[in-house]
Image (tube, rainbow, N blue to C red; front, top):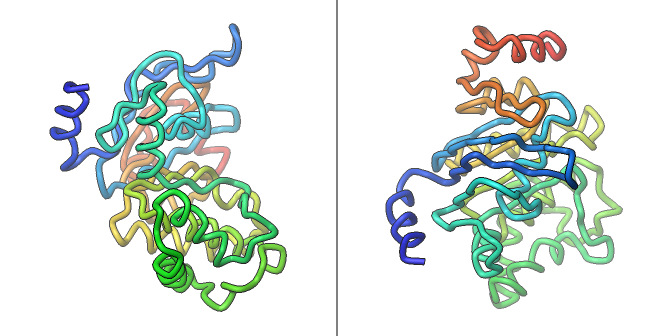
Length: 256
């Protein structure tokens, strides 16, 4: 444990996530992550792109133990991700996640969805949780929807509620797993605008997405994954205009 505390002290200033040689198998045969390594600095926006089945979503879900990995190491916010439930809980308190599906509680109002975790996990008084929730709903542009239920909202509005809910825990890092893939095209922009504003505020973000415009404009780095490996990482300009790897160029030819 001393070693972990020392590591936290050393990397707190500039590193949010360090994943080193991460491997994951499903069963005995499907090797979904094949030694993936990635470092994410604090305040950095890293976009992960790649074809379906490349391991992108699985990889970021290992960052908060939604997926187990069998080999390698992951340090998040200076905490070594292990099977120790205390470490997992500590990491989950500092890492927010937004999924493809909104996963809102249909029987709770928007406000209740956003305040639930702060009240039960952070142990905040209801008044404090509601005050912060209302500020966040205003930040994501749906303050007027606070008393409605998820079923009364559009898909884009529901995803913005999901972002506000994740932010309500005041995370240091935000993970986005294809947050616009379940939305109708006209609703995509409103969610991406919220994410752009979040990036502008200095939030550390790892985003799995196929949204090329967002990647070009917002990412500090873009990572291509394919067949369970990290193929290439580069700045947006280098990635889209001067990709070094043939696998990257093939992927770009299919999406651009």
